Image (cartoon, rainbow, N blue to C red):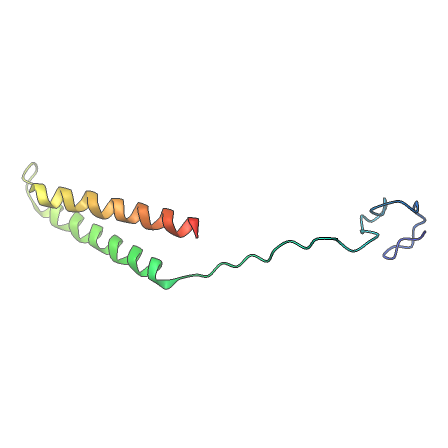
Length: 93
């Protein structure tokens, strides 16, 4: 038989052409199309969380060393955890 792409003579039972690599038959199964929706809610939440981190960093930078209130430190850690969780959730979708 002849390759339909390059015209080379190939074996009758060949699955692909040895010269150009073209398949001799149509694929039995087609891969599933990738559907990836980009949600804006995840992006908005991430931007808000990053803005909160920047605001906390600016607030903590104005305080004298060692005088950072516990709630500010807890809020910074909470915002960082939220950012990581949102990114992990967005990758799983």
